[in-house]
Image (cartoon, rainbow, N blue to C red):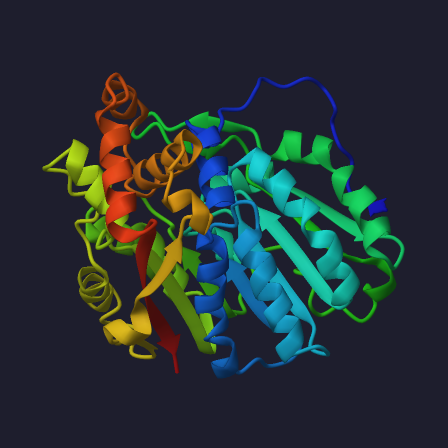
Amino acid sequence: MAVLDSVDNSPKEQPVRFFDSREKYLLFVTTTNEKWSIAQRINDELASLQPNPPALRVFDAGMGDAAVLTHVLRAMHDAHPHIPFLVAAKEISMEDVRLGLEKMADRFAEHPQMVVVITNMRYAEAPQLYPQRESDIPNLKRWDIALEGSTAKHFDSQLRGLSEIVREGWQTKPSEKTGNPLYVNPAMIVLYRQDQQFALDAVIPAAGPMTSGYDLIICAQPYRSRQPASVKVKTVVAPLARSLSAGGRLVVVQSTGYDPGMEIIRKIWSDERPFPTPRHDVIEGLKHELSDEQFLHCGVISDEGSLFKYQLHVLPEEMSHIGTSSLLAAWNAAVYVAQISDDRIDEAMQSSAYLEATREILEKHGGLWFLNESFVVTRD
């Protein structure tokens, strides 16, 4: 592995963890098929992409552990096995960057002509891979890493060896206004195969802001559900839409609350309304925000084209005798999707009412499923 930048290994303060309840997140992603379902929805758009040389460009606006992204990359390779890929992804969580890197070894083996860029920058600046604030530009940390070898095993060992780089680049601090994590310094890791470096010269991002747009932007569950539509549009969706290339497609996915998961929530918190901005509200806000952008379009998709389900993994035989582990997994999924705060969850779990409510809903529906909705923004 050739690392084209030096790493300062001096001790740093421990970063703030992105997930306040990471164990809830990990339990959710391992007990439901949401990531796969989102990827399938994204993959529906691949046939409509119109990539131009030198590469098919993809931006993931919230990589997480890269579960969705790797599913999409497999489908992209199947559709375009000989087109170079530029894959950029935004992620603030140090732990998720580590998990995401581990998933890339197989992708580099199957699709050699691929450049992967992971950054911690904000939505407004991440697509350009360059800080907006002048004061942040001198502090930008960039590591260009040429992976040696030609097999997934070769790449895996090198990607796992990037922990010190990730530890340095992904330091965070809490926002004084919201408490959300902010980067200490903007950072980006640029990865590609060393044996493809010459062929990928025009694909590897040069220093400075990237001016070319993206053919596909993935925007799955990118914001806190209770935020007003105006905030979601202004801080997340509109900046991403402006980063589309001609013919590009931005796919936005969010929860609806029209599902058995929400029935569990209402059993405990009858007045809870965690999803106040359905896609129609976000679309209307986006149309207003982009009123001067005549080449961007965001039409309303029918329910048939927009809505899709995902499920909790429960064995059929478990439904006749629902055990505690299944109840806890279902409860965790419901409160995670509804973004209920830890203190409220802890209070609710002081009695057995939450288990009784969860059991009732599981028995009523023969399992647990959730309903997501999606919409697409396109550029002429």
